[in-house]
Amino acid sequence: MFITSILQFLDKTALNYANLFGIRDDLDLTGSQFNWLASIFYFGYMSGQFPASYLYARYSTGKIVGVCTVLWGITVLAFSFTRNFAGAAVLRYFLGIFEAPITPGLTLAVGYWWTRGEAPLRMN
Image 1 (cartoon, rainbow, N blue to C red):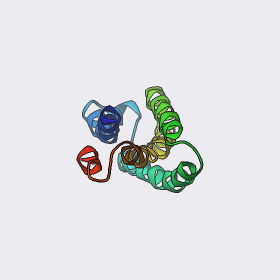
Image 2 (cartoon, one colour):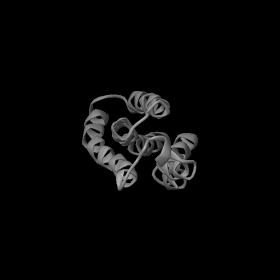
Image 3 (cartoon, one colour):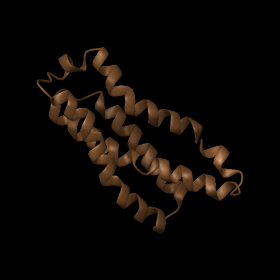
Image 4 (cartoon, rainbow, N blue to C red):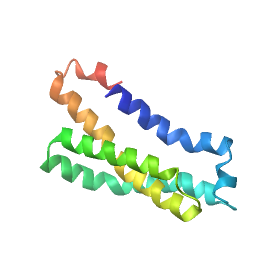
């Protein structure tokens, strides 16, 4: 759970590191396209929140977190093959969708494994 949380944080900040290494030139970004790449992730994140809560009510937490983590990893790998703004924007949107269930799922998992008094120490 700790590693997944760290990777999720790093993924959210990875675009800023990519900017330092020339993603604007690699994708031929112009004007505010870089800003849109940063923002569209959160549009996907918001879009993924409601379906995630529905899925958690219907299916096993472990399966949802596992599937979303694998899909999230595939999307991160696919991002390395993008060559333009449109492809990057689509992948950033899906990245947000696949990351949305991770934090709530890990919070649910902590609630399953530890008591109410022990859980806050694990969620920090």
